Structure formats: C-alpha cells, structure tokens
Image 1 (cartoon, rainbow, N blue to C red):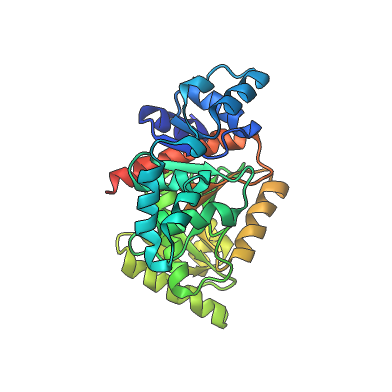
Image 2: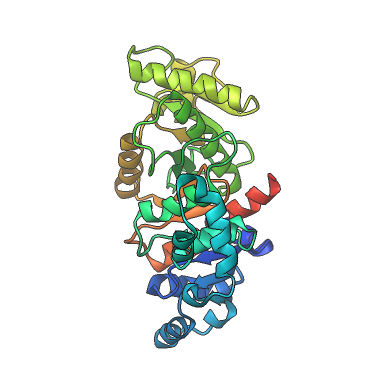
Length: 338
C-alpha cells in the first residue's frame, strides 16, 4: 500500500467533519464529489445551496448532496457564531456589528464551526490567498499549546527508496515563517515531527536539523541558530529523536553520516528534514519535485490548535482530494492528543 493509500484508508476508518469554505469552486466540488463517494470524510460545503447544486449538476457530480451544505448568508446559527467571535475578539476592539458581518465570510464561519466543536478541520485556498486563510484561523482557533508560530510541512514522495521511509520524507518549514529564530525553528522541528507521525504515519520520526555545517565543521551565526534550536527542541520534546546541525548528505546517507557525525542517532537515517529558513525550504522541495520527479503533498499547515490547511490557487482536483484526507488525518491526531 502506498503512503497516499494509507492516508486515505486512515481517513476512511475514522471519518472527520471537514469544512470546505469555497463551496462553488470547481476543483473543490470535483474533489468533494470523489471524497464523498469514497467516504473519505464528512464534508461541510459553505455557500449558496442552489448555486452549489446547480454547479454540481453542470459538472455531472452525483454525490454532492451527501455533503452538509450551509449558506453563510442564511445560517440559523449565525447569532451563536457571532457571539462566539465577539467574545474571542472583543479585547482586540471587535464590535458585535463587525462580528455579525464576519460570520458571513465562509473562511471565518468555518473556523468558528471548528472552535465551537461543530467541525474538525478546514481546507481552503483554491480561490483565497494564504493570508486570508490563515487570518481567521489564528484569530479564532489560535496556535497549539506551547507553539507560537505556524509553519508548513511538505510530504515528499521520492524515487530514492534508500532514503527516509522508503523514499518518503517530511520537510519543514516550506510555506509560512520566512526567517525563524532559534525558538521558532525548534517549534517547527517539533511540529514537523508531529506531522510526520500524524500524516505520513512514521512510527518514529527521526529529525535532522539541517545546515551547511555538520557538528561544527563551519562557524557562522546561522549555524549557531540551528545548534540552539536543536537544544531547545530536545528540551521541548525529550523523547524526540533529533540531532543537528547536519548537512543534508550527513542526514540521509549512512556512510556520510558515520563519517561526518560519528555516534549521532540521526545521521544517515533521518526521515524528517528541518531547514533553517523558508527560502531554503521552498527552493529545496521544488527542486526535488521538478528535477527529482518527486511528488510533493502539501504544504500541510502545522502549529494551529486544530487543522486548517491552505491550498495553492494553482491546485488540481487531485491535490484537493488528497489534502481532504491529509486534513482528516490531522484531525484524528488532534483528537487523540486531547
């Protein structure tokens, strides 16, 4: 069974309530139709019901009526959610009038449903920017306990079966925090390890904190940051298998790891890669994807108390379908950790 098949099977075994705020968007509807047909999740589509069903009919989609459809403009629970939003944001100056307006925004409504326990996760971004997707998530759901920054992990499915878990690796941060400080980088490491376990199904994430130096082979302040982040991550999660600073070859290749970092429990055997900044992460995963013909799944947002994921506006229907299953896996893990 492939890793994608495993992710989908885990989602099917424990169906989660996933909100899709872009309820009339074509790729979203096509993916929802497939997910509903295969019972991957219990989907909640936000939008005008007549418009959603008309679009489904136009596209020849026969399973959309299995979803729960909520119209943000005519929602009998608007008052409840407006009150919740007002209570959450009144110290920031939000008025009830502003809250009543925002609950008609599908991105806000979805996050309020999650906060109120009426949904388990949200997936959007086919029409909306990352900023628009993240803003209500951070205002309403907020970051997970002990975490201050949001980051994005990428699940990389490569053809190099000798590395990671049969060629599968998880890389973070590739999407959100441009230049993390040492504490943020430690948080990214901890969150990426959790994503590797919850989504990729790694029984034991083995985290390499990457740099252009291995165990003091180079001196620079950016190397110092990685060393400090490794120390902090170990303090945050003493049970986590993590080491750094390591160069990429030392992290992945056993012979190189044994030579450059003798005695390291991670060198040569890493399945989770944490890069020192967003620039490195974004370039790296795209290079591996294009030049190495790898499959990249994500970015998978992490650090939020409950799963909210952001699609690329250039996503395919298949991307949306897979990310529904990924979001469901995160929701299952979040419940198990409560």
